[in-house]
Amino acid sequence: MKKLQNTLYITTPDAYLSLDGENVVLSVNKEERGRKPLHLFESIVVFGYPGVSPALMGKCAEYGIIITFLTPSDKFLSRSVGKTYGNVLVRRAQYRIADDPERSLHIAANMLSAKMTNSAAVLRRVLSDHRERVDAARIENAAANIKYNAVKAYSVESAESLRGLEGECANRYFSVFDELILTQKEEFRYSGRNRRPSLDPVNAMLSFGYALMTSMCTSALESAGLDPYVGFFHTDRPGRCSLALDLLEEFRAPFVDRFVLTMINKKVVSESSFCTKENGAVLLTDTARAEFLTQWQKKKSEEILHPYLKEKVQWGMIPFVQAMLLAKYIRGDLDDYPPFIWK
Image (cartoon, rainbow, N blue to C red; front, top):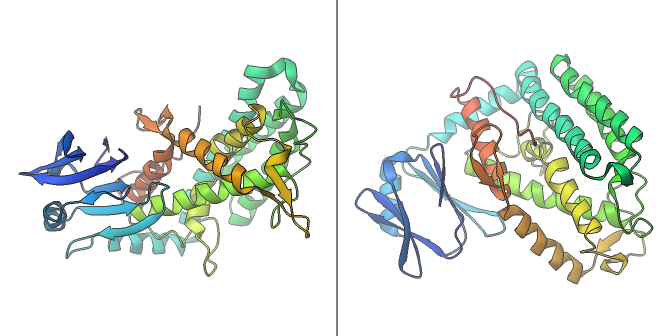
């Protein structure tokens, strides 16, 4: 049970929520583990299946408190709302911003600048921890260029210019990514990003990780009342979660890329963890995919200090916090959207 601003997140396995007077009560196997006054919240996000009592759902509907249900792996299931669904105002505001190139560019610049800043931070972390094992000059040069462009992103005048800047930084970042692979270098040689299909083990894991994080971002946006299909940087396309892809940018380097590097450098995966299809596509084997997901769940449970809230938060909840902050900005409760900056 974790309260962040006016949202209650239930991440305890096998948790059941019930109502006691004006309090929401968390129980596991009928044993009370915690309680909070209901009036403190405007939304509750539940990760897992055990459920919520009808009495609590009724009281939440009466008070206008939204309950969002997700699977333990963060897939969106449903949302319980009362007669007045206030989030329609948030979505209408979101659509107006999406139709305004200048306002969309402002949010996109925040997110993409954060992506570049986080990419540079990942490179500099490697320099700090393993300088003697890498080509420090190459990495320092790439990190400095990316960091410079992260600042420059705020002064671009069009989405096309921002896209070009982001592409340049991605190329610089992945040009030195092979330096970050410290073990099994022959088995996991990396020469550049490729996808659809992935043609080597590193890209296979990156693509899988990005897909998992996109799913988390989609659920996070749904829980915050936003439309994950209407983005500010990625354009509308049928069936594409454009806003989820926007939000994903903030987590690529600090979560997904570092996770993949850990899997390689700690030898959790090996050459035998992958298979190659007739078309050249490289995929994780079923056993390796299961281990990837096990380690992913462990990573999500690790706590970090959120740079804006100044509170310790599990990694798996960071997309939900960012979606909440984005919704607050869109509806006018914040002066600006604070993107996630990893330190």
